[in-house]
Image (tube, rainbow, N blue to C red; front, side):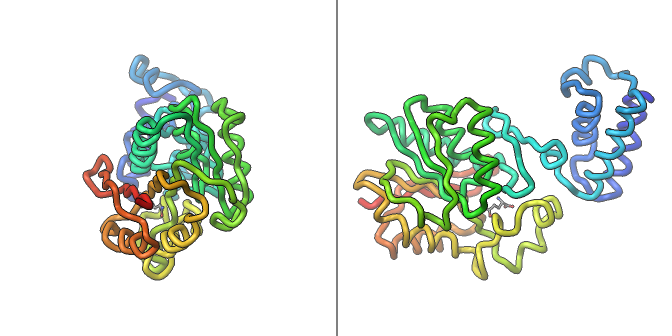
Length: 281
Ligand code: GLN
């Protein structure tokens, strides 16, 4: 079977299933089935599929047609040019969250000495680990309510060579944390419960519900964080949170009430206010 024929048929199947980037995804799935990179496909557009490769390809196209994201099918996702293993129990890392990492890195680079970072609701560990990867002197802790997420984050720490500088603890919010940190980052669940079912199936079905569900107004995670972190910060510490669309005012209000001031607002690649920085002073 020729690559071009396989991809053409798969694109028809995926488009019929409502997949928006059908051609791109079909090629990614083809590359996976052939055991080559996407760039290899461009160099050799007439690859031939063995019967085994056809079987893998068809099975993965079937999964994608069920709206399972490619990252879930392969169990991995690239985030800030690092490869993360993505277990079904953790939120699939999004490019939107890279701005949280960049902001934390900028703040850390302005500080003197090495920084200690806390990641609340760490999931795959992508925020904490990519911060540590850029800052060779930094170290940090990731907490998550889910034991499977902690295992996933530890796996990623080992694979990325960051095990020595990171620690992952199962904890309900910050209940099991008692040290102080220079930078606290979090991408808490921030979707309103009733809105989750309206999201694309890639998110609504395949991301863990508890990683999305921010309660009736989408803001309960921010309330938990704002009311818990005072004992965990120094005077000069920063809190960097990801927010959902149109949440800047309400999240700022929650942190203001807990006596934190808004320091900075950063936008994601789509121009949406996505990241807020707070501090005590
Ligand atoms: N970024 C995800 C989405 O918009 C939500 C992640 C979250 O709730 N933190 O689908």
